[in-house]
Length: 273
Image (cartoon, rainbow, N blue to C red; front, side, top):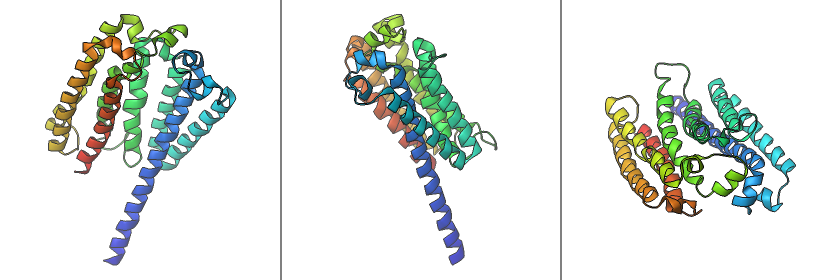
């Protein structure tokens, strides 16, 4: 009996170590992605965000490159130590981060490709990578489940990610980036964003009720309902005066990040049940 209890404790400790490694992996990959983005957005940041380290001269481009490479290598190394599945997903995420910011792709220049890349890297693949820390995402009877869940996060970010583009329009134009509000105008861009604040959460309710995901049905349904109502309110804020999104501190910014965190934590709780 003691041996069994001891084995259980060892297993729990190993799971905690893997989860902590996964969290560190996500931090490193995000740091590498942000550094890469700021290197290639330096011209625009001098206009939009002059207080950042590179525009104000607190950091050189060479130093930023070393930081980005070190963080990226650390993330890939950790992923490889966890599993081949985790490594492959993180590698795909790193490629997507490169494609968003750097030539020859630099998808940030195109309003649709930009949002698709963000939705894929920070929505879909981030969730799948987290799942791969302790589970299967390419093999097994329900390998598709993390991709379904990650797809809901990606659908949210597909529209919600554009909230940042309104306040960056001046610098984006200077760099030749045709973002959603630049391409369609503020009012039309806001209208195009709105479904992403509600639809993913209605689909979460559907997935829970149909048994497509292994999360607790009641908790997942409740989470979807709360986020759908919340998203509807944010959509109202965005649609009421879209020109106010050009302000850095527009309320929708805070709501978007809080919704994303609530979605992540709430769904984790629903899976733990």
